[in-house]
Length: 575
Ligand SMILES: Nc1ncnc2c1ncn2[C@@H]1O[C@H](COP(=O)(O)OP(=O)(O)OP(=O)(O)O)[C@@H](O)[C@H]1O
Image (tube, rainbow, N blue to C red; front, side, top):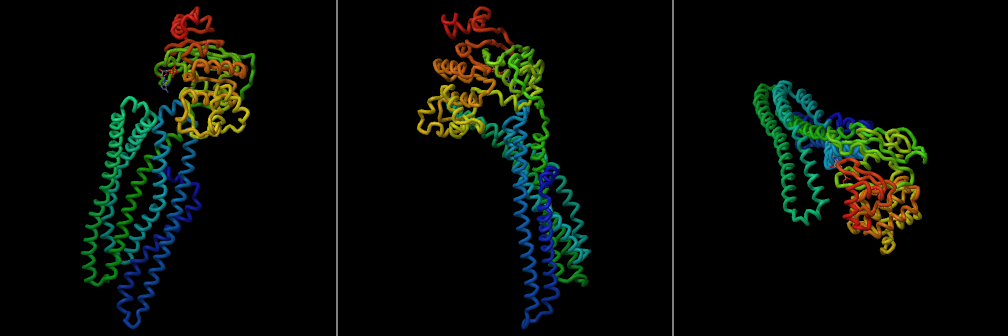
């Protein structure tokens, strides 16, 4: 409820108008049974067939009251939907911004599928609840309390008989809801799993098919799908117990009212019309109780979803932004790692005691077995994660003290599995950075050896399929490299980014990079010695540690691992 109130707060003016209309609309509904009783007991007995006008007049009043109630309800319901849609739009925006600011560690912790389902299913649940509560949250209590008051006016004794059933109904709603509410939380967890399975299936469709694992994946999907359905069913069946139980209690109440009503009619305390009105009020009260139950169900869903969304919104800022501006000082190392250690799970270091210095315009090569911590070094430099021990300096200043946005905007990063968006090649390279014009894109394309773009029919306007499916691996990599170069970064990081390029193209690209971007500091992570042998400094990594460092020539003399790699990859040419 707290979350819904929070969401509705900015709309309080419109909400006041619409809820007032909703209240008035509901009150008008309460007058109709009263008029029916009046018609039966007072108008019909005194009207003769030569003049039916008194009956018509009461009929017209009833019609006008019903019409007014209907119009007010329609207006209020439409406004409710509009307010809910607007409130959820704002909420999604807020959640999206927050997700953007989450650190990689937090994203790992939430997991991507869970973030997706919180952003979609949970916000949708909140939308339904926010709209539903505006529709029923006022109407149901007004009809319930108003129905009881109007019944009092008709006959207080019968009303007391009716009221005696209400605590039993309350008890049913409370007991069942207490069991049902936690089930909605469980459903969302199962939806997360389902999304994860679907996501993995879609992204890995080719691998799955090539390994003939489609059937296995289908079974996995079926299992998660069934678990979600079971969860939904369990929650719905639990909550669905409320209505029949309530109906039973209300029907017992109705029988009691009719028995008592018969006695009171006999004794002349009430008239026939009063009994009709009473039964109608009883139905209104019953419907109001049912609506209140629905409000409970909505609130349970909203509570579960609101809590999941609040977990994102209240997540602390893991990566504290620095305040200092970057001051370029070419005399200091551009990038320096000082005894840096880091652990993803805070148990075992994934990189340990890493130290090196890199001056402006220099090239660092990093080579090592898979999982040896190469990408982790990049993650730390980009402040996707913060170091556990030691520090990273950028022109002599610890990167934690610098503005994160400034730091990242100076670094052009190309990952092996980076994303091509389903936009034109031009847009993919320019990437919404307005300062990048045709000239920069042309220059970047040539450095990245992506001239194949000029040979395409629509050249830069050619549209890319989702994830660049209509490009070869090497073409994709060259567009990604062009994207990074176009921003004229101070630091260019190629993380296994030229692995799909043939030896010749890779060599030409490095040559062009060195000629054109002489002042750009470069970090090249590669499995091929040929990609980094001209580097000013090469780190050889194994199990998170630097096991050797130096230039290609020194390493050939000092590192047996490097020697072995060179021998395998380059044969006698390197030795
Ligand atoms: N987000 C993460 N959460 C937990 N552990 C991680 C995460 N990312 C990487 N690791 C672990 O950290 C270690 C280093 O991984 P890293 O990606 O830096 O290796 P790498 O040398 O770049 O490997 P590759 O050459 O295969 O890309 C590995 O053991 C890996 O399992």
